Image: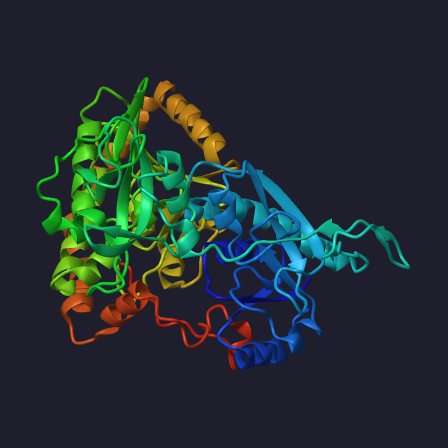
Length: 584
């Protein structure tokens, strides 16, 4: 097996997925954040890797590294594509097929020899969503194949053809060169929306090609904002460029042939220069706009319910998986309403990109009192979790199409069964957010489903977790070896079967008896009080760690070093975990 060093800008979702997949194959993986050349060179010297992989890099690897160690770059473009805006251009140009290419680092960015490539069909969605789903799946296949080829030791990667010359020959075999296509940076000038010229489809592509970074810079009511989270509007119309309605977090803006909903904005010049709901940033200017009640044809929907036979499905694709106080309250109300329907099973679907990531840190940071809003937010999530735990009329399922983190993981565990798509990544820990203690009744739920020993292991960890490990620990109940629409169809079949089996009534009765016994042993109110006592200290106590960590996260403050949990080469002694918290 190989010693692999990840050189990466951040430990993002793709990097985490590859980290887990390669470890599952028996490789030793260490991570170094690409802070500067000196740090990168030092990491290579310390670790002496067999192979370097760059899953997410924003600058060139130093010559002294790639000339002495094979470095594989994960590029989110088809074979031959080059440039810093590969995925942006794919969406901007409405490409039907796109891909991921693994190429070897050399003296020029994205111009090295190609090891593997994996293509996929695109969707009409945002860059961030395409990256978290299709790009991540394709990159996983391509990287694992490249590592396999590297291990064989005799593979000759295919060179790029700068000049579109004829085939070239090598002493060992004849290689067909792939024609290179260098695309420039997709600038704000090119992304600029022309409201009196651009159709709804064009506006959507421009905004989606820049979501979640850098956003499309535009003028709204005389102020510059970056636009994100764009969705089509089927019915409303108006004068191009005008704001014509509001719905939930979003505002509706007319195009030449329709309208679009814009859910989130960012104003670099404001007191809070990070992404926030559009209706919050524009609150004083849009009070006169009509408020739309969303349905399938109109409005901005971030919560909706559908029913098929004896199964109800509750969808909540919150932007970036964050759940603010008001969102939790609305979801709580929608869940209560779902429980009142004549069904047997309720499936909590979350969203395509995320199931949930817990508290909405951006909204907390932008509030008048971060401590008070943190308290309101965690209690709103707890109210929802309590409702799910105490559901005695239905069996409940959490269907994890996308990743889940922090409180979102434990909110999911409040259901009877968790079914997860094969590539889902879980981060069931709070520690990196200033050693938050956490709530969502985890101190009741984890020992109940995972056992005392595994519960300790889960809450003490700081590392991402793949579905196989989560299954072995009892954190989830089943891994469905599918993703995307195939996963959803499988979930619907399983949920229908769950409602239809003769043993349904017996299982529901047994569930309710177990809950009654647990309540007699120790009330849920006691678990909540104990958790929130710790959380109150995190929010209002003398230790500012949570507030500092939240600020750094929201403002995207670059890390000055790589955490020792993932930087094996930086450890001078075995990593000693903190003393485990007692689970009561």
